[in-house]
Amino acid sequence: VGVSGVSTVEDSSSDRIAAIITPEQIVLLHCIASSLDDWAGDTSAGAAACPLGGALGQQTIISSCKFLAQQVKVLKHSISDHTEAYEGEKDCRISAYLSILEMLATVLSSDDSNEARNHAFCRIYLGKETSLVSDTVVELGVLVDKLSVSNRGVKARELVIDSNDQRLAVVLVRLIGNICYKCVSNQDLVRETPVPFSDSIPAPVSDDGSVIFRSGLHVLLSCTSFSYGCFTLREWALVAIRNVLDDNKQNQEVVAQLEAQKTVDTPELNKLGVKTVIDEQGKVRVEPRS
Image 1: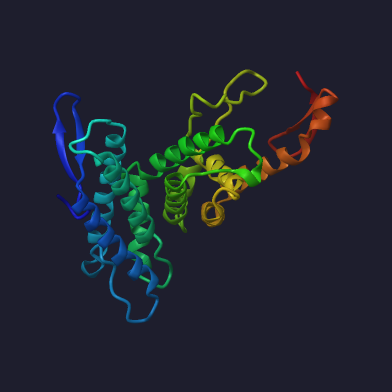
Image 2: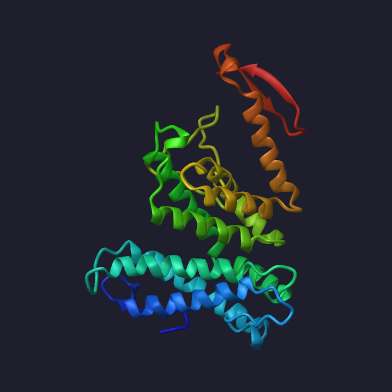
């Protein structure tokens, strides 16, 4: 049992590490999360050090966050395992998974005024030495596809997102935004990480028949479309988008191109049998639609 309260055992039948979560461990996680929330909300000059080892320095914070990132991976795999050590254990796994994601999002929210140097190094380390960034954007893509399918044909004001999906969406977006705060390498990872479309979503194809590349940046931008189903998600998505684009020219260019395509490629042009194309210099030209 580590700091997070998660126990693991080797599953010899599947060569996997299975998570065993008890209600008592969930209580422990909530206590740690509450302590982190209090720390993050205290901006006074005499604020206490980060509860995850801030008093012991940079390396301890990094080690704690690395451990939490490892537990996220273990729990994510175990959630798909339908076997339970006791009735309701899967719900405990989901609760632990969400709690640890929220803890990571909170500890990485430290800004210029509170242990900024330590937490800046922690963001860089997690991006380079773990798969947390790529795993998070892929998980967000799966959730976005799920929400898109479940609300297909529904008017924007009638969007319905259940409480668990709302909590997961918000924490994934929070985590992406906070881990990318003033961290160019993580911003680049969000843009470069391919996010495959779920089986229930037809993958869009280009004129040559190849599947259009979808990155973590595309998925993050799409989160704003669920604002009526979860206003908090829209607000965090805007913060995350700002952090991912901040001082990153390549990410800004991707968004600018998407905005340009949305503006000039209209249904009216489609009816006329033509399309707009943006070349490498950013110039727009009209071509016949094949």
